[in-house]
Length: 229
Image: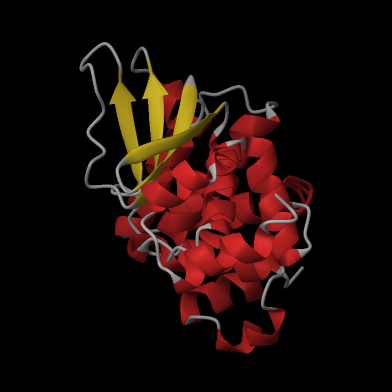
């Protein structure tokens, strides 16, 4: 894959091939290890090590900000309140639950709606998931509906152009692999979650740091609140 990087980038960026065709030509891009390796080839960053280090470092402060907002009034507060009611029922010592809670709350705090990005599939209710309309998103797969499904479904799939590309065991794994695939496949961020992905790219991953001054107001505000302590 290293020796064919230039050819692959040319096909993806210049030829503008459909994602399905790209993945047929380069099936390794449906493997977790190769997605991580491709991201490293493009950005020179270790995808999961860097993301989890930064997410875990900022998680306590982010949770504090989110819970403070949840205690106020308004639509955003209501969404965050319901998320943390469910979170409080979980095993909070589990790092995967903590990471998932932050990633679920982040869009709401940034005034974004993740309902089209994050789809839930109860396998006992239908044979196939309703994902044809998902351009870029995640599919939470569960055999039963419980409060834990919000944070820890049995597995979660990365969906691009209505197709399941890869399945991962945790929400955080799926989110960051999808983030990496936007780089590998030269995809636009989901419009409904533009702030969330911008925050991930520029604040958590430290990519394009030279344009931090051009952050959107809500992302800039969260960055300043995050780094204020």
